Length: 283
Image (tube, rainbow, N blue to C red; front, top):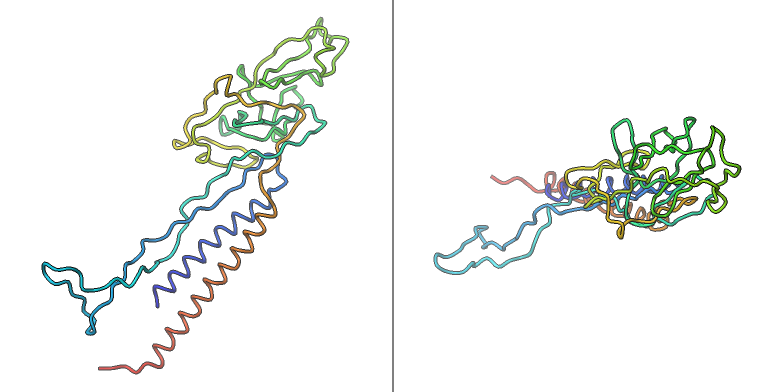
């Protein structure tokens, strides 16, 4: 009976972890490029039950087969094995902000944060006061030549990640400073965005603001070959890959499983109380 209480308690603990994960997914459903987390469980080692003799002693005759028939397996509980991030592509939403970008395919932007180089799928950038493309927290977006510095409303990001600007002559911009390169008089390629991949993205460590850091399991970031390079879309944002309906259904299921484990513990506790109080002691 005590084993049953432990089994029910482990189930409740596991369901609480999954409930917290689902709640975090739902809370970030509107966050740009947020990737949902998934909980993976594993069972404790199962016990193989054999029927004993009438006197309670099991016997295996020497040189013979096991005379105790197998009754079945007894589960001993469940525990959380892993919480990993699913990097499936989110839907793309068109915006009117020139600084917005989205990666269509596998890959990450490189952000220079206060923790060093970080990876991100979020392309909700701004143009800071110094003319650098940066995250809302002020961390610069990295190109192959360093932080990307552009002119106000005078740059274009091509699908291959190239950053083009309309050149400045004599400290004055050309007559046209819009983002339509067909009307530019002096287009110049400034840099190319750092778009990288990792071998095992599910092992990346998740930080706040949709940023990730590499681990030994994920592997170091590398620049993919040109044929494998994802498409960079300017004036687009990738939305979260959280399906609110699926998460709510999973939350209801987890809540019911939690209640079932709770009732199992209550039942075992009642039976244990009856055993102690009602079964007479024997000498």
